[in-house]
Every structure is written in structure tokens, then in C-alpha cells.
Length: 113
Image (cartoon, rainbow, N blue to C red; front, side, top):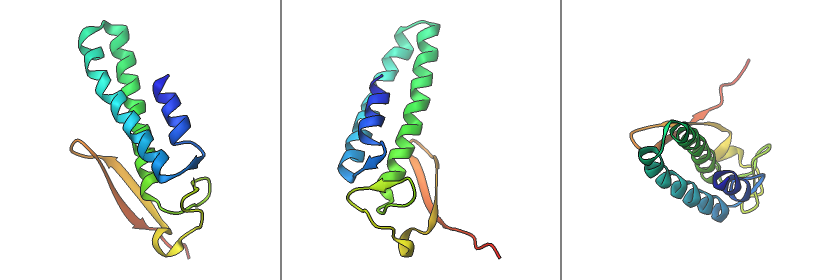
């Protein structure tokens, strides 16, 4: 429930840098709370904790990608960056799990001829 609320309030449809940063803080806090749940509880709670951990990772990736993209494009709307910026952001963002953190890179969109 905390994760759903944090994502809705801070990583939702209309975003800003400050709301995304606040959302990331809340997601990180949720992830920190999962450790004791996994150790102290039974199998059912272990499964739920693992599910929440995976959802928190996805929420973190979405929030980090939205925070990095300082423009508005398609359904990604930043009220602190309302314009589209083809010069810097007509690119794909590739994010993946690295050694303890999310790793990202910009890749040019291939031209179709």
C-alpha cells in the first residue's frame, strides 16, 4: 500500500523533479524495511516481501528514468520541463540493474529507411 501510494503521488502522470526525488526517497525507505520482513516472517510473508521488492525496483527504475529525462514527451510530462527537446532527448534510455544500483545509458533512435 505504501509503495502504491508513493508511486501514485510522486511518479504519476504529472511529474516534477522534486516530486520524483521525494518518490525515490520513499521507495528507498520501503526497500530498507523489507530486510527484517524476510528474516522474521514465514513463507507467505517472504513471498509478499519479494513481490514488493520487485515492484519497488520497477518503481525506482521508472522514477530514475523520469528524473533523468528533463523534457516532456508523449505520456511523460514534467511540469518543470514542459517542452520537448529533440536535441538532447530524441534518444532511447536503456536502464538495467547493475552492481547495487540502476545503470543507464542514452542510445540514438535508429533511423528507418
